[in-house]
Image (tube, rainbow, N blue to C red; front, top):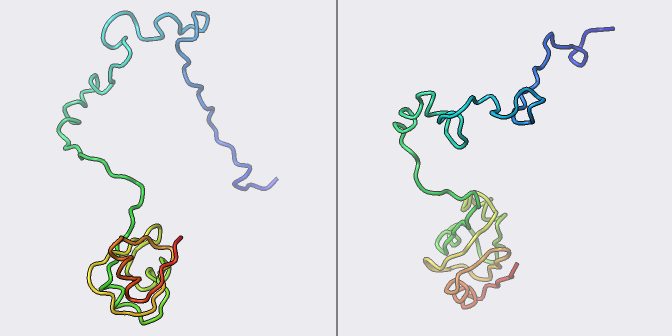
Length: 146
């Protein structure tokens, strides 16, 4: 038999974990290895208090607030579209990403900041503000809903 990674065995035996609170016959029943009364025998007491780490934990400044993992719509305005695209172009998350106007194409919203100077653009798979929708229709461009 040749020696390879698939047939190497360690020279140790994994020690099984101590199962406490499973009846007196197990040897760790009644007080479950916590001893009798006192703070350390009670449930819900942090072990960090006993280890002297509480002072260190309180010294570290905590980061406040909440940060959602859900991605938000990226915003693109008319000025950026006018600079990046020619007349008659298709505007969707893929083309906006290629033009460097967005970082990811999970969600894109077009806002009406600036003027839409391009004609016959077609917007597809993007959400649009109400004012932007009016300006798009006024410029002769088409808006294809998702």
